[in-house]
Amino acid sequence: MSTSVIEGAALSAADRCDRCGAQAYVRVTLSSGFDLLFCAHHSKEHADKLKQVALEIHDESERIS
Image 1: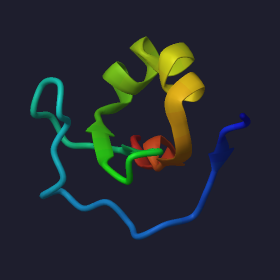
Image 2: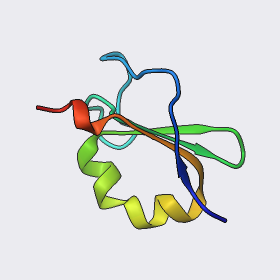
Image 3: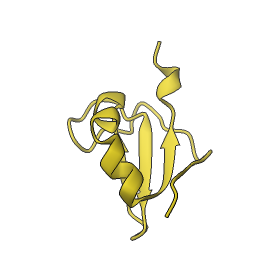
């Protein structure tokens, strides 16, 4: 299965990382239909595993200045 990076609904400051609570910049949609939210740090830390299980990855980490 391949993982695609897609355009989806924009993440806002209210969206928080499921791992640490920081602002989320990455939304990962799983085959179950559930979404996981990650800050840029944790999305990079878990990128290899996330690519294996994700249906879609919405990445807005380029917004970080």
